Length: 243
Image (cartoon, rainbow, N blue to C red; front, side, top):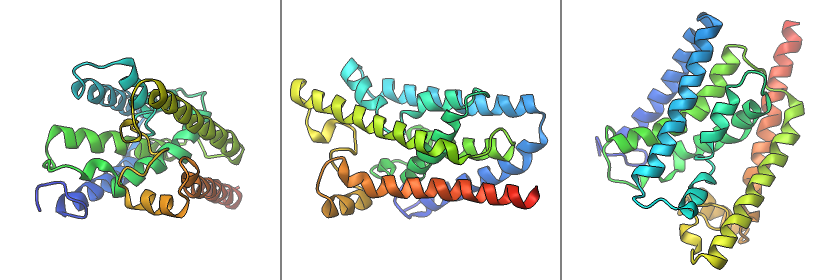
């Protein structure tokens, strides 16, 4: 019910519409700017999102500990506080590909099935706005960079990207296993989808199909991998036709 953020309610549709509209407008107007203004826009989006993520860390935890920071930092979407600024460094191509192939897809998932719906907040509540902002930017930024010819997705980065993703999941698994074994945490407060589905219908269905922590995410990993090859193939096809 408007204006509350309910899954597939009016507010949800409005958020999706605004997200798509802003990306379309950005793809139209950003390429017309001088390169220095394009880069400033990229950096603004990255730094503002990093600030929002860190702000959400602090504001929700009066006594922020190393354990809490570790758990929050290793969430897929929160990890963008590091990936986004790195992606804005012009000579660093790998973070741009990781952002496009992995982080953007994870953020897109949150727009449709994330825990942003587990709230009675109104669409204009600051907490709701920041939640959607820091999930929108990881989708929009690589698209804007491509539109401005800042980088072109290349196939050679796919394998390194997904090896890094495997390393990330290994770190999450080992780190959270240590917290559960030695710091008194349980599966439900590891803030990680590695061990359980976090009440997501999609992840719950996958866990029912493959009831093994971490391995149940394998279909998503494979889908992301295939999606990355499709993206690069499309750009290679366009390049060949325009050559």
